[in-house]
Length: 115
Length: 115
Image 1 (cartoon, helix red, strand yellow):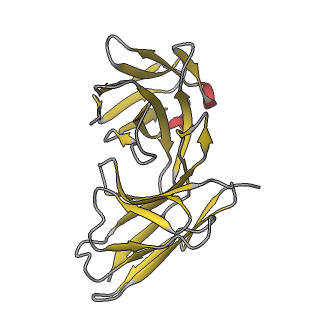
Image 2 (spheres, one colour):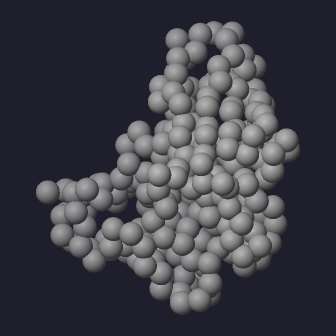
């Protein structure tokens, strides 16, 4: 079984400052990794994903994440945030093998960008 | 424009009533999913379907039912047996990527409230 821990439930940051949202996972098998963003009262939008290859993954809206297999982490970063980045961010993992269902989510991090 | 649509956006349920949430996708995806999201929590899987006329229970299937008669449609019925149905319901779908279902894409969600 897999588990995902998002270490911060709330992250306040000032506009134009850098931000890092932390995600650690636990799994006995290799996994694919995902970050999703959810704006208020909306569905989840895929920000980026790591399936294979380079461990530094670039996504939409200027976000990037780095897969660190030894530390089982997949932290999300943005060098300069905007007010419009205020949203909830979810990290998720899926094992390489297994059924289609096995996407495990973290509990989310609320990013609030302050003016 | 390809995507996933969910309707209605808001749904009110009276005690003892069954209600059905609609999910339609025109992405030609084989797999579809229903998740429940409660405040401050991640997503929990209710049901999923990998192919037409077949579906499996997720982690919290009690009090819910689904059907998959068409590839593009995966309606969810919240029955009167579900004692705490107030939540945000998200539908997702995924396609084969390199031999397995990896990335899930989400609809805009339906908020269910109990009167």
